[in-house]
Length: 119
Image 1 (cartoon, rainbow, N blue to C red):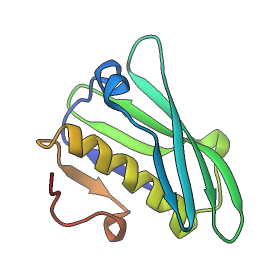
Image 2 (image 1 turned 45 degrees about the vertical axis):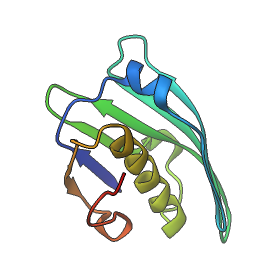
Image 3 (image 1 turned 60 degrees about the vertical axis):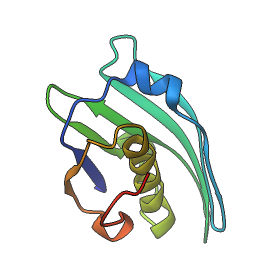
Image 4 (image 1 turned 90 degrees about the vertical axis):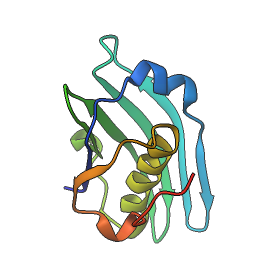
């Protein structure tokens, strides 16, 4: 399962104010809405990807004591195309843009993440 782990806890309520929809046109990747759970421990992001086929799914972000994990929500498990994997990386990059001290510690998506984040 594609995933990205960041080295710090993310306050999802604070990030919900900073979050802006992500849109790439070719292939189409649209991350439109963010839904934060009432306890602030996890959030869902609605995603539409149109590449070889049409995918609608959720990205799940969970924030623990000392890490934040970005992964596909298993209930909406899409085919793992390059564009689906790239959507996880795009969300990670937006988080790192607002929180530049957060670093990726684990992932199976290294090919989709830049080596150095430039703000």
